[in-house]
Each structure stands twice: as structure tokens, then as C-alpha cells.
Image (tube, rainbow, N blue to C red; front, side, top):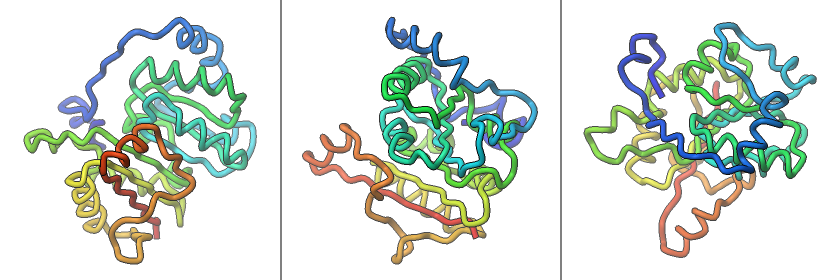
Length: 230
């Protein structure tokens, strides 16, 4: 993702857009479901209660991949509304296909840069929770500047969260986990919900992915963090 300023949008992105080919099923689901669940970036704030047809807390997930855990979360919490942002077409198609299959209605999707969506479409204080699970770690040191969790982006997220809103981060790269903690602890107005001011066990609200299950068998770690907006 790009940084909060317009100039930075032009200079750098934290993702590499690899479109890939949609399967026939994904393409068909996209055609059927996008008019219902798709949201288009626009230079004006959205009324989220109008988008969902009701007043409910809104959870935003940035970079949902193929959407499996996002679908699981939305289905498990019908009292919440979910917005997913993903730049890769096959992931969007797969997510909409699964949402249709499981009849998940409390979900809407952007296929666009998350920073632009947040800046242009989401009102300050509109979000109940923001989730960023397993973002690209950009593990080479010269690429660390592309990491999504940076001070400017955290400030933007803080503005969009309601008072008491939660930012939930998760990564399977220990170096990135340490980086996330360093960034968050340097920012004002956040409370780390870990009693030790570091990591928390995976909450039940975040489904265990197949990728994680394989990693656990191999002894790989995953680091979850939650921060509350004060």
C-alpha cells in the first residue's frame, strides 16, 4: 500500500499486483455477486449503514487473500458487517464465490488500494475493528520501506477507528512482528491488549488457516497483536 500522502501514492506501493487468471467459477461468481457485494472506490465518503442496509459495527480486513477466513468470520458473526479489501482479482473472485455458496450477506468487497479506500471512502470513526493478517513481510531489508504497518498508515487507521476500536495484526515473520510492535508502541493513543505489552494468543475470532496448521506441524510461529484506540 502507499502512504497517506498523495505524493507517496505515486512513489511506492506495498503490494505487487499479480492478477493471475480467474477460474471459470470465480469469473462467474464475480459477474453475479459484484453488483450485490462489490464496492467501487470513489472520492466521497460512504454511508456504511446505507451500504449494508442497517446500523451495525463494521470490521475492515485489509488483504484478505482468497477470503476463506474472512468468509468464516462474517458467517460466525452475523451481528457485525465486514468489508474486505484485496487487490488481486482471483482472490476477489474466490471470496465472492465462497460468500455466494455459504450465503454470507454481511460482507462487501473493494478491489482497490486500501490507503485510497480509507482516505476517500471511509469516514473518521466509522470502523469498529481493522484486521491485517499475514501482510507481505518484505523480508529483505532494502524492501522494509514497503511494509504496510508503518507510522503514517497506523495514524490513518487510528483516525478511521471509533473510540475503543481494535486493530488486530498477525504475522508469521518474527522480524515483522517485532517491527509491528516497535511501530505501535511509538504511536500515541493506543493500548496494547497483551498484559505483557507484546503478543496475544490467537483469538477465537481469527480462524486458524490451513497454512497455519501446516506451519504449526513444522514448528513455525505466528504472532498476534491487538491494540485498542484510546
